[in-house]
Image 1 (cartoon, rainbow over the protein chains, first blue to last red):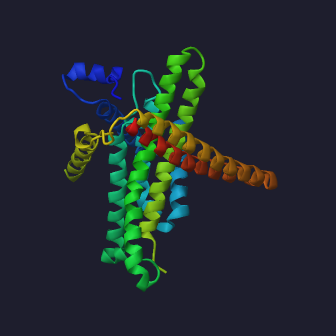
Image 2: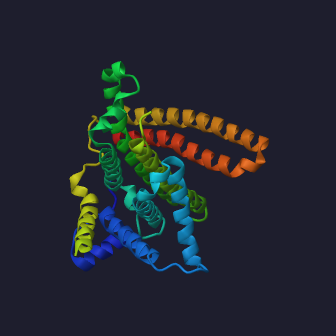
Image 3: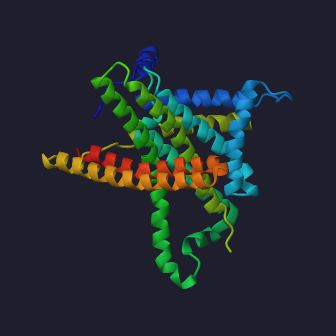
Length: 225
Length: 102
């Protein structure tokens, strides 16, 4: 199911004489946008907020409230990571809606990379907080059930990055495919609702990815009873 | 200097992360008989049907919740959308496998 590269990647490849793939170029563009947004976020906040500052504050409020609801007091230290992830995924998704661009997350490689990063990060946070007693998370509540619980827990933990990656990839790729099919059938007005649905799905999938990241972090940081 | 080093590591990590040569996508594992298209179609039909039933139940519960307690509409709507996205992702897993089979 290979298709030719989008216009932007063709343009970039011609300009720099590279042979970069579609999602690499779009991933770099989304990364640059995230970087610029974060640089803009470090400006000194004013007492009477400008519209841009209100928008940033609302984004950070949403993520911060999700962190506090799920993790509690320690959630604040994960705010930069989760915000960067959210903004990167959102812009990767949304750029695909513009004709001539494609979404970096429409490729399984990008979403797998993001899922692996989240997996490694929450395990790292768990080990950093609990030391090697992090293994106790996998053993379950009763000690003599541990030989049964350990494989089950390990399998369920391994399934997490898979499900994260495939969920995001399938949503973006499926949306794009449906849009292309409609474009082939009735090019005139009908693809517009599909694009609106695509925009909606972009939002929701970012939210789902971020929320699952926060839930996994909460599970790693949780205190035993 | 330390910040520049950290920045360089992050940039390198991002560029490595999206490298397409490091992962294979959709490798041909199954033999492509004419039946594979039938399998893809039937499995998608099942997935869409049961997914629609599940989402219908979720929406029914959400509507009843809003009818009983209109003040909690915001919370119920958020929970509904998140639940629908989870159910939808199960259907989409089947779609991915259908593409791999086909």
